[in-house]
Each structure stands twice: as structure tokens, then as C-alpha cells.
Length: 377
Image (cartoon, rainbow, N blue to C red):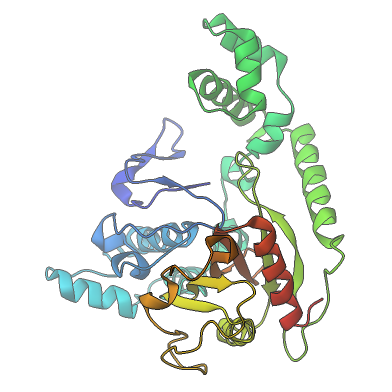
């Protein structure tokens, strides 16, 4: 759940066995499911188009772009995007303007363009890169297996490692409590460093027992998703939704309502905006697939008087004045929430609805009405 945001050759180190180590997390940030980053940072030559444009981004996709630039530099000896004039450099990055040398292998010629896609929704993901034939060739053992899942680690405390950390001077009971509640402190960091080192030394990365635990955990999560009472209902026309409650960051133990679809993002947003319009929801465009919304319960037609009463290309109704509280409306009847569409690992698109302000149950009522408008209930 960490995005680096400054990946470049200078921040990649090699240990005595030439294993790659990522360094300098000074610009990194924690990713929170349902929340998006917007800070423009990093080195210009390696920064993704959405970062230099000041747009919202989730995290992994900007690191994938930087990895694509690094891979190009390693194989070609030059940077794909380079110019002494910064505005010209940004123009090349935003347009995805670069050339592939003819000496590159077919595998590299296929992989790099998939990583350097300007549209982050269409850009290759880390799991897809790991499965690519070029990446798989002569793959070192320590990279062949995904890193361990800390959630599974937290469920089973290793007594031997626990004692090692206690011997360093930490209180045993406090350490156990911190591990169980996933509290980050010096004791838990020491424990996980020792645990990570054990997996690296023993069998490449993961032992068979731990891999089995991970698989079992995945099966449980998958089963809980498909057991949703409304999962798998088809949206008339083109959408195939999976609807249900999904977990966000384990530490916060939050849940969010989400819709998944394989349809084109613009088709999804068109249907979503039609549903919001039917429910008299005001919204303001924040990004291409991100909106801030406001709904007043019990006031039909409260969005009357907006600039436009029909869908248009900007996906935008009204202006700031439409989402400002006024004295005539009780705050207990107002729900503010965000709508964001982003790509998931399974090559699907997930529409996330997140409450910002207002009564929780009123928000759930709105979500139910929203799903009914989409005819998935």
C-alpha cells in the first residue's frame, strides 16, 4: 500500500548478490483505498503524464510509468522523454511521444509501449507485467513469487521471532498487542523485518506453508465477494456488475459500496450520470472520472436552476454555488459523497461511492436508490 513516486535508476540499489533494492522513499505516500493522490512530485523525465498535469492518481499506475522509463533507459542507453526545455519535455510526456530503437527484442518492444501508455486506465498493471513473457525470462528466484501478505502475517504471530524482538528490549505484551492491532512502531517494524528476512533466506521468498495460507485467505475473500445477494445481476445493455460491500485498508476497517464493470469507462459514466440526474443529485467534476456530489433528501427537484438540465460533454452540472449549504436546508438532510471510477487488477472498472458528509443511513438509502436506477437490484 505504498506508492514510491520517484522511481529512477539513481534510487535503485544492488546488494552483494545483485538483488534490486528500492531506495529513497522521501516522496512516497500511503495508498488508501477510495482516496486519491494529487501531488505533482518526482523527477520530470520519469514522471507520469497525470502527475505532471496535476491530475488525481491512485498510485501504482504512476510507478508503472516510471518503471517503463527505467526499462527503456536500461535497454536503450537513453531516456524516452528528454528535452532541455521543460515545457517541451512535458509536451512529449503528455503526448507519449518517443521512439523505440530497432535493436530491441520483440518482447521488450511489446512490454515497454504497454507500460508507457498515457491513459492510466489503459496502462499495464504490476500483475500483468509479472505475467509478461519478457519479464518471466530468466527471472531471479527472489522475484518469482509475490512478496508476503502482511495481513496473513499479522494473523499468525511467530513465537521465535517474537522472542527475538523481546530480547532487544521490547515489552512482550505490548508487542503482541501492537502486532494484533497492526500498530506501526519500532517493535512491529523489527518483527516484520526479521520475518521478511526469514522468508527471503528460507525458500526464495515464501515457504510452502505460508503460500498455502495466502491461497486459503484469497479463497475466503473471493467467496465472500460472490456471496453478495445481488452479485452477478446483469445491467441491461452492456454492463455486467458485481455489487457488494468490499473492504478498504485493513487498519481502518472501512467498507465502501462499489460497482464493477467491463464496459468502456465513458459508457459507465454516462449511465451513472443519468442515474444521478434522476435522483436529483448535484455534482461537480473534479477529474475525468471523479466527481463531488451533493444530495438533499426529501427535496425533489432541488437541482432546478442549474446551468444545464441534460447531460453534456463535460459531465458537469452547475457551479460551486450548487454545492454550498444554504440556511433553508437542514444539514441532517444533506449527504455529500464522491464518485470515482478506476481500473482494477482484473481488467475491470470499479465505481466507488464514498460518503464525505451527512448521515450514514441516509447515504445508504441513496446508494440503494442509485442501484435501483441502474437496475441491478
